[in-house]
Image (cartoon, rainbow, N blue to C red; front, side, top):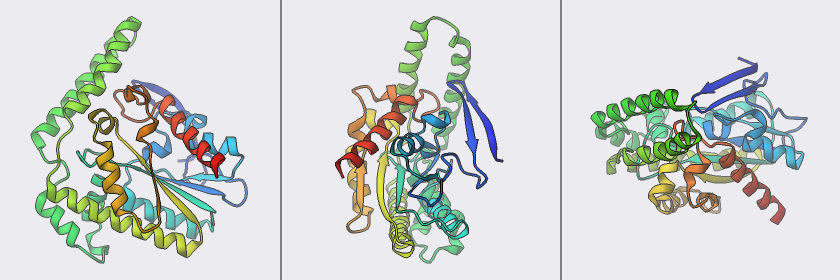
Length: 296
């Protein structure tokens, strides 16, 4: 689907523009300067076109860019997406910025680590090494407690119903709800079995090594940015996530943590129910990227 679309939810009603290549704007103007790679956070779930951090960064720097953000994808699949477009479109960006949504303390859906395990299982026959996949299959799904998962799904549905009833009530009620919903997510985020985490880290490491090879093949520089679910920030576990992720990166790769960007109450930068960046969170990332450029 291309053209103008509408994306709606309890917390947003936004316009989304999809290019002829099936990607979200910005659309490249001539040779590509920068390609943005990631999942729905990079795509800009719940944000208007001009509110996504790839759009803000490229507009303010007057760059020709592409947004390869793909909702529901992990790092393994994102490498497929990147190489596909480099081949089919002939793009040769000067730089690729990879944004990884990661949390090592819990592997809920949307976490790139969990998505990499599932993608690895789905693509087992195409993998050259299956050791990490076999470990994951023995350990089971990244969701380690089906009863808890069912409870969390039911709780989320209940929260949506409550919001539907409260959204037109007083500002005080809305403020209380927005602060309460993220705390529920933090409380009921499931833990993770060691075997699954090991598998997730192995598969993610292989994806990053492939990223390095693709960069050398197509002649671009790259940087890796770690984005965190709100749970990782509220729990105070983001530093452990950063430490583990940096240990997986190829030698010499630039891996940037973004956990220091968020305010004392990081919930203010995320949609309470949906969990993606709101305008505040997206702007924080864009401004960080712009500051990096100004220092170079």
